[in-house]
Image (cartoon, rainbow, N blue to C red; front, top):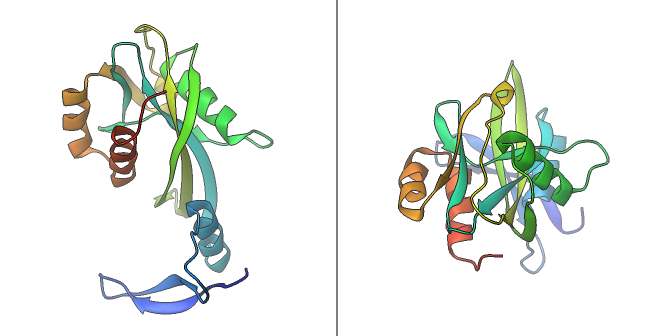
Length: 181
């Protein structure tokens, strides 16, 4: 692993002992994916790789989904042999009933942990900016727990973002601070 060591124990803000990644040489940029892999190897969590999109239409609106009682952005798990960018496009298309997406630059990666059916997961999600012409009709993928899909103007998505996940808020801040496609 070069000059990275996942062995340093530190006291986290909650007072419990946590493992930290330490760089013994010059400062290194550790990708969220690498950090996830290291932590997953050290512990029993299962690593999940996903991709999704910050999708803008021709009217400057952004695509949001409502799932599990919160506003969210479309994303989903990487299939075996699939490229990350292809996964992002496929997941947005499937979850929102959308086609004609234009892939833009990668915005960032987010990492979050969750438990499901007694198993702990560490999910790394690769986020891309996307664009679509016009204001296409949307259809929620209800079998994935999505009950609503909407185009939101900036004031509306900023309000919705107040009650979403921290990782989605980070995507929003990054996308809002960069140029569109």
